[in-house]
Image 1 (spheres, rainbow, N blue to C red):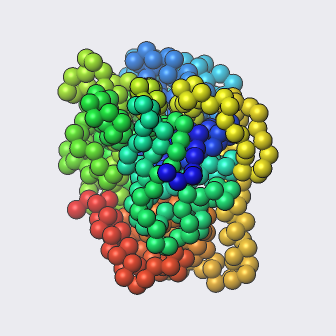
Image 2: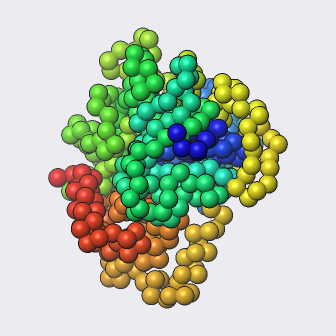
Amino acid sequence: MDNHTYDIVIIGGGATGLGSAVDAASRGYKTLLVEQADFGKGTSSRSTKLVHGGVRYLAQGNIKLVREALAERGRLLKNAPLMTSTQPFVVPVFSLWEKFYYSAGLMLYDVLSGKLSLGKTRLLSRKKTLELLPNINPKKVAGGILYYDGQFNDAELCIELAHTAERYGATVLNYTKAVGFIKEKDIIVGVELEDTLGAAVGAGGGEVAAGGDGINGASHVAEPTRQKVSCKCVINATGVFTDSVLQMDDPHADTLVYPSQGIHLVVDPKFFRGINAMMIPKTDDGRVLFAVPWQGKVVVGTTDSHVDHIDLEPLPLAEEIHFVLEHFNRYTNAAITKEDVLSVFVGLRPLVRSANAGSNISSLLSRDHTLVVSPSRLVTITGGKWTTYRKMAEDAVNNAVFVAKLDGADRSSKSGSTSSTKKCITKDLPIGDLGAARELAAQLTLDEPMLGNYLDHEFAAFHHITYAIRVVDVVVAARISYVRTVEDFLARRSRLLFLDARAAIKLAPSVATILQKELNWSNEEREAQLQSFIQLAQQYIIH
């Protein structure tokens, strides 16, 4: 076995896995995180973009989950101010009973948030409701309630968590898959890894950033596609892929996850004007319907459909698209059609199975997280939601430390200083690269002003500023933000694929050309990357 030994290996580069890497590394444990695709590729980049306590969980009586989520909401907005914001919501009501019922719940929501409240809930007259939601269908509207929740950029937060983990000495690798466990006396003592793209790289193509302790060499050097690392504990934070890792450990392990699919449609803001989001608390299937301004567009969703097939790129069902369109049109005067949808993105929720679960109750399954420790000392954390990722990570690392008896671990940090603390410090930990990307972009454009040019001047001027991607943005993403494919940049470093799939296809050739130079692609590799992205982007367009 190679002489790379870690205290904790984390499998899964979504919200919970990256949060666990930050938690473990900031405590001083030698940490490796591996992700089979790109960071946030799966569910963690496909949320409704809300940092929230879960208004509808109040109706289910889950006060504990709401209180915990509201506390975590406050911490996230404080620790990641550049990636989060406060979003006003309006709940239109259609009777005096609804006004009383929902206002009581939302005022309780305020009370539960305590000192971390984002704004005071207010009752609205019919006139004020129509003013704040100019596209609402006025028919039967009796008034409304204004309340406040958090909003964020989910994929960007994933990348900034990766930067934060590295800042504390962790090694984080995308496109690196755990393909097997190494055991001694039925206890996991190592993990076999496979690079899924070629030679695994860390921050944008160089050596893995881990204080000179990368497990691979430089980019595009011919090396074995598989290698082994030793570890004292493994955390399984793979979301909807949880069961595959559990069964890699024990082929007879019970199925834990009940995947539920949710879709979001993205439309132009002309169909839903203003700064306020809309929340319809109960649709035909009992779910909440959101229409939320985000990055110059409007995100509308979501659905809750049980699916049997788990895929990195799940596809929307025709009935889901119809459901969202029909409900949005019912409550607004927009009358949007499939042709008006700029992008449709799909996520899979890793809901945890209940012993009494039926076949059509995914909307009733708990959104709280579940933690399982296997006889092999594999720690599995699943369920939950983005807002509570930090608490999930804390619970996972606490259990990993306990089962692996890590109290005596070498706590040397990346900077060379030592940490004596074993306690979680992430409640108040700033998240991000602390300005490294902005500084690099400024320096590069100072040295070479042409890098400040937009990829497409006419396109940038005609469309929203979101589309105004500069050459330097792609260069910086490749150098320090782990970009290894055209998709990485257009889907998750910028959010263009999620905002307007056709626009992403238009800019893809320019992005591919820049990445070809940065990542030393051949012409054939560039063309393969481009065609792969275009094929993928077609799935985000409703045909």
